[in-house]
Length: 168
Image 1: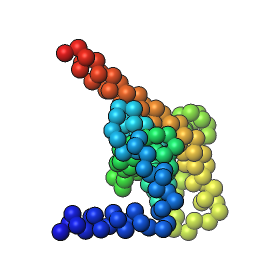
Image 2 (image 1 turned 135 degrees about the vertical axis):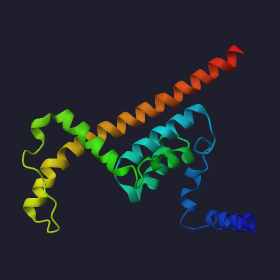
Image 3 (image 1 turned 180 degrees about the horizontal axis):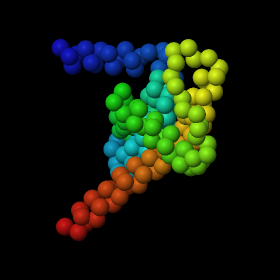
């Protein structure tokens, strides 16, 4: 029963007039076939997209960057879930910490931010001065750094795998 439903659902998506214009982009073999290179690109795209805090647009960003960079789409989608309700606060704090370290401690506000339900202009300025600028500086550093680290880690695993396959 579920297999028939899935085939029917797939055909309805395939024949959709809204998705028909994207069909030529989504049919590229590099999006779906698994090689060490496409996997490494998929991990890099997923890490980059997952760290950028645009939660509602992460899937669209993963699809677009996978098409542009020739990455494996399922891997990019799955790795982008690095930011989830359990990890978003530690990721945000780490991004803030890296940005604060990069800017130097003199950019952090000396007046502590106290949360208030009435977010007036003064409270918004305090939030921006204590969190906003270091976060925005740390965001590209952490996102690009994680993407590069993930890419080269997967390439290294692929190289080691190839080395031991040829050695035996």
